[in-house]
Every structure is written in C-alpha cells, then in structure tokens.
Amino acid sequence: MMAMLVIQYVNGQTNAEKVYQKAAEFVANQQLEVPDFEDYVAIKQVTLDGQPLTLADATMRGLYNYLNQ
Image (cartoon, rainbow, N blue to C red):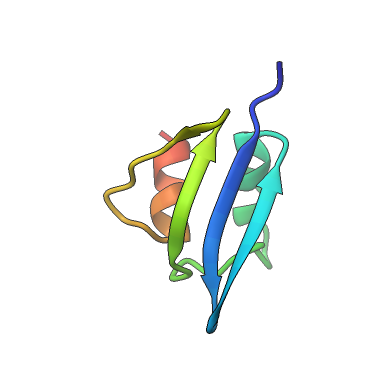
C-alpha cells in the first residue's frame, strides 16, 4: 500500500489541504527551484498513512526536515 501524506496548512487567512501519494514526493518537490511551499508556511496538521505526525517545528521546513531524515 502506498504511503499517503496529507498536509493541512494555513494559506494566508484560510485553511487549505494538499495530498501527496508518497512522502518522498513532498520532499522532492520542496527541493525544486520553485518548491510547492515556502519554508515558513504553518502546518495545522499532517498525517502519514492516516497517523498524525508530531513536529517540533510546525512549518513546511519542519516537515521537510522530519521526512528527510
């Protein structure tokens, strides 16, 4: 079964959600010259395979560092 990464984040004043089929897809996209998200974007909640992740740094940078270990 594929790992599914669901990120709920704050986009300006509104809440938004982005789904990746694999955590590695998020990591790869963040390494692009123009990444999917700026490092400082705040995360409300993130789940991997339906299990919530606890991040010490609840930003896209924190999530990237957590997944890229």
